[in-house]
Figure 1: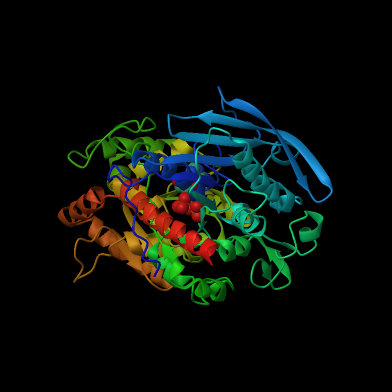
Figure 2: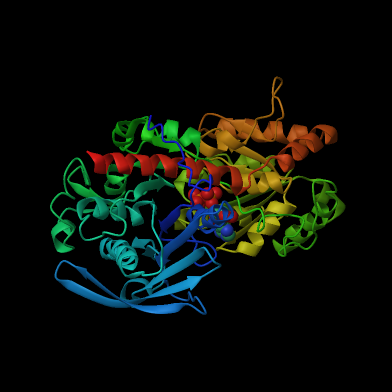
Length: 506
Ligand code: ADP
């Protein structure tokens, strides 16, 4: 397909690309999950490869960009007008972040929801983000050329669609290659169809070829249908999501994208997630010398108020850091709670999410106070200490676009036990009689029994120190840095540019 070949400049070097990212989260400013980690790290990796990158995201409550240049912003959606500002911060010669400050939309608790309920004006809030990003490109005199517009998830899905629908309005990006990345297909940005006229989104937005999805408007579909290239965050998830079982009714839409739909495994930020330099850890360690891990294990048990005697320290600790939602297989853990608690292991759980899961995990810890510690909340530091102090890390996801925690675990010598789906399947090489270079344990069926069998197998191997050390070594030597993934994105960008040029030639 699109046999685009990088064009060489006169000097014989591949020209730099100007890339504009639009997303609702980016670490370190705003994070609820893996999306933020990706949007935080990918621009840095692209800059390292020589490209110019600007990232646009909302300015949420409590967020600040000290030293940013403030530019006025006016947004019109339908008949309503909002005033705000753009906070433009240079992070180096070729990397910038732009925070969209419209207090009425973003200065509130919760990025997308509060008290378990979606904010009622999410359609406006993220149509506004799209328009703010496009306004920025029009007024950004010294920005240089934008070759690629890269939208992330439904919150940015209107961006490629507006560029396609209104090329004479958004002239600075009209000919750019358009790329849409799906970080999680379960979130589709579905709104009643009247938002199209209410927000003045334009006549063609609500058509089957663009954003109409079962009589609603899907911002994600708008983005997919309007982009030159569509990516998701692992090769397995790309294959899975064109099947009905994992497609959330989007399998047909993605099937139609054909070979313009590709999976690129996320990297991890290896400067943040490095056991040799991690400031959150009581003791640092590396693949060459893992003795510090035991110290972290003790600190972890102490943090959770669990026993720390010799007995406890020789017993394996199983860690979970997760959003407590159905996707993550919380129900599988709870359904097998009795036999899991009977295993000779200690559990530490950090997470937030659906209140019934939070309650159930807290109740389990209350029943088995010397076997399970639970912390409900979002705590970056404790997440790091779990990755370092646990012996095993459990991710029994029902589906998993990529998953980052299993990669952090591998790097921290904490052996992952995962369900073989999506990115978990791509990054974990399961232990078994014929396994080569195993770095963890995998199970296939989404059943409590399959999970329990995998845990039992893992704990048997834990008591074979030589085999366990080999598993840890394998994981710690895997390369999950962003470099290789960023190069894959650059290939996709060049394909998108080529496709955009062809669109304009037609
Ligand atoms: P998802 O994006 O589906 O939540 P990922 O594994 O891709 O799952 O990324 C989750 C990210 O959020 C990881 O960086 C993980 O450490 C972090 N995380 C999730 N829950 C918590 C929590 N309660 N406290 C701290 N970090 C968390």
